[in-house]
Amino acid sequence: MSNSANTAIAKPPFWRDAEKRAIFFQILALLSVGGISYYLFSNTQANLARQSIATGFSFLEREASFEIGESLISYSASDTYFRALLVGALNTLQVAFIGIILTTILGSVVGIARLSSNWLLSKVAAGFIELMQNIPILLQLFFWYAIFYESFPSPRQALNPMKGVFLCNRGLIFAVPESNPAYTAMGLAFIVVLIIGWFSNRWGHKRQELTGQPFPALRLTAAGAILIPLLIWVMYGSPTAMSIPELRGFNFSGGITVSPEFASLLLGLVLYTSAFVAEVVRAGIQSIGRGQIEAAMAIGLKPGQVLQLVIFPQALRVIIPPLTSQMLNLTKNSSLAVAIGYADFVAVANTTINQTGQAIEGVAMIMVVYLFFSLSTSLFMNWYNKRMALVER
Image (cartoon, rainbow, N blue to C red; front, side, top):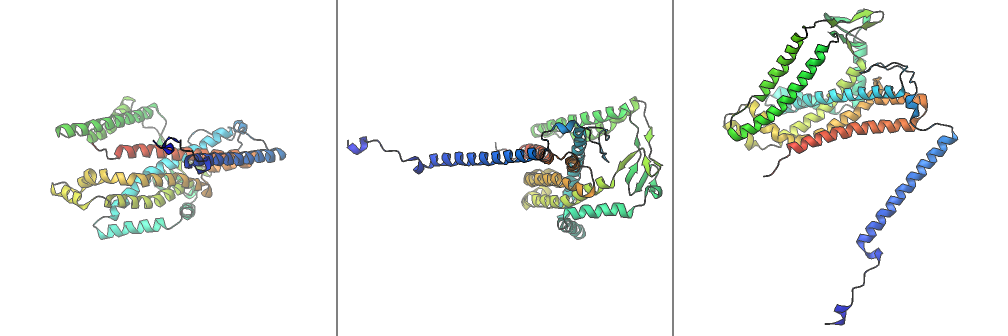
């Protein structure tokens, strides 16, 4: 055996070892980021101390001393900054949640219409997409806000198209049922029926795969969602008392008011984002091979059944990822509400910053709240996307 075979191979120095060199540069990058972060933090702290600006979140317990025009929960100027910010967060969540639902519905309808064999319907859908996509959303918000304020009269000359409904530059005011335990029970029953319906629909699909016999889960759920709450309403004595809006002074009292700010924001977000969702839906549908559609029609399925049973289940796997991005865009674009005076989280946080002078904490809270909303949406959509993904046997 040669001496060279017995001689141990000398290890190269660490600067010639790719693995050790990579670890060294990662440690160096980590130390650099840590050093820069420490410098910025200490410099900020020193500047704040020099200008006698308080830090921390203790201001959240102080009295806010400002009113908020719209609130899902009770609020007054004597409440704390924390409650004011909670009101703003709920307002943002409200417009984002309703906007996502309406955008998905409208975008799906327009996307399907874009592929219609009807020439007029297809061109109208294409025109809607091109128009809404190419007008900046901020301009759309200004446009709808101006429409609401300039086109409708003052409360004293409010339009009254039907009893209990008024339309003026303060918004749409309409009558609603007065608070009653019956409505809470009806709402809970409705949710329970939907949950049971969802499980029964899953069971029905498995049963159909095994036996070939369909189970009318959707029809039973729809019937239960109507009849059971109606039965509960009768059991509670059929309450019919209504809170009817009445003009008192310069504004209406009673009922529910949909403000111009909320309506403008919701309308702008939905119309703008639905144009992009429509293109996502169109692309998803067109990704399905023509042969599958022809095969479905050859076995006697109607166009609606082809769309429901063949096209959409497969197209959703293409649609969901870009649809998630559009949902996130809608949520983040809701921060533009400050431009038209809607009391979302950004508007309330800006007022808080102006009054307390604690900009760092205010901006940090804005970032955290929108990060939470975005991650929550992504988490749900990723879960749904995983459920819709093809699973190989």
